[in-house]
Length: 492
Image 1 (cartoon, rainbow, N blue to C red):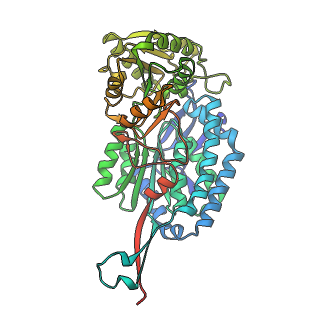
Image 2: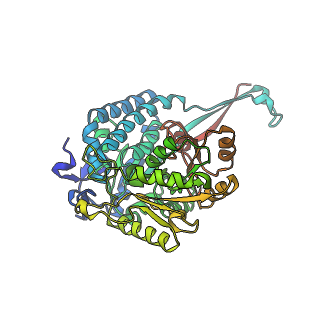
Image 3: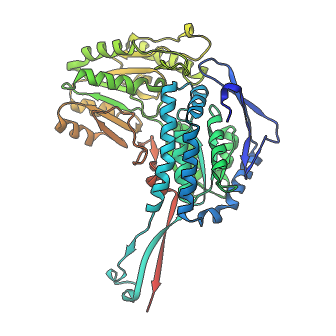
């Protein structure tokens, strides 16, 4: 299969057919490391988005009744194909979204295992039995047998982000297919090629016609059509809170279920007894991995006054050693941001923080010396006021603020002081204090002595407040993607 280095043409995949849009609209896909086009994709119309849902709905019953062992076999076949194309997928990810190739390989590996896990977890998607005679009403329960089953929910719409174009998409596709739901994929317009390549592999793995469909296009046109189509039953989305809440509003009007993984302002809390060497190393990884363009990136470093000066100095020195460069270079640790608009956003965040008295310890500017790509120097801001934009809004770039606190109460207050609650980290040698802080943090996950970016693909993942609704994590996503049905048997 060709990689993006040869220039890819992405077509719509609807009902088992690859074809360009009848509107003849095309969109270029650019490499953030160079700013140059690496391919183009066909842009769907509203009618073609609706046709993709219709194609999925046509096989809803047949795919839902396909035995679990057969679904599992196809998921493993897809996993095998991804494993065979591991380097090709990794290089496409690196080029399409600017993810350093060493990290892109990790993403490609994780996606391989996600389909394996889904195949294994599908057999555990079971209901319950209930002792009917435990209930006095209705009468006659002594002669009844009660149990529940889980039915597929129906057509699932997967709307995926740019930052993990394969793995985060797989966290939507794998559980949907394992649970017996056909799916329509709408990848972000910034990174559609990886999703289309995944669909090629699904087709080759033998998934029936109509079970997997892909359409590319703007959210206000294609996305809204998918969300509001009468045959779609669940929308699983990863992206910004503003877009996610809009989807929830539209879906709610039609009583559709949603799984939303949205923004985060994940606090990395450093207590006064934290081992600084290991803490600093973890903070640098958590803050600057994939240029900070990660939902669970350590976006705020909350540091005890007692160690703040030493931490800030050591953190800045270590961040200064990070190799910034093009994604396909083997030694690159920090690549570009996704597009020119992201560079503008970085400038705004830094300018706002400085205007509010924050100190720039490192970076704070673009990196034109690296060429025409979208590069921004890793940036460290110290003594950042809590009201600064960078302390309240997700920068989604290589900028990290250090906020100082006096005691645990203030640390918790700052940590909980945004609209978000995705993940958090606490670093300390005192587990008693760590558990006390973790209990008070309002987040979907709290990691003690591990960075905020930690995630287990098979375990529950999601946020509270404006960070999300529902949970991902294979079996947990499958439960969201199924309906519980109670069945009673009167054997009297």
